[in-house]
Image 1 (cartoon, rainbow, N blue to C red):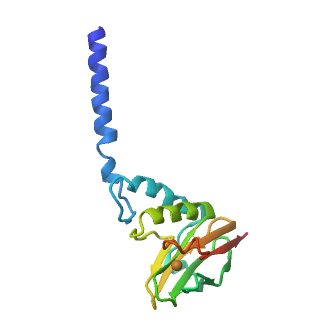
Image 2 (image 1 turned 60 degrees about the vertical axis):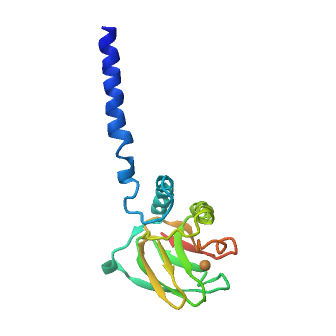
Length: 175
Ligand SMILES: [Cu+2]
């Protein structure tokens, strides 16, 4: 009887290992396209998953407003404050007027701070999240986003040093 229990426990352990531990690398990548050292993917995925706190990727067909956003090497956005109606799907047309790469990443300030710290550790990390766009000098990129929650949110540039230099802005979503 004891022997049988022992064998069952061992089998369970093997099953657990096979089911839970082994497939981990397979879903570690998912929709995220960040290039970073192995083992860091999961942590980062959890973080960018937080972006859903302010809405979800928008469908281009539902865009009701284009919002032009300028970025420059003075580490400022223009406009620095954007008002949106809850439920609205907007297209941010994000232009980089500077000489270095800049980004617009949507999130809460807490998420962006956490993410900025991550970027300092892995400066080469590229973003391919629907809530973010990285724009080379002289180029324009876009984010299509539907804001489903009212509140005050943030956006920032997470190129190392830029967030710290104050490259951020506010999004106010009204009911
Ligand atoms: Cu920047």
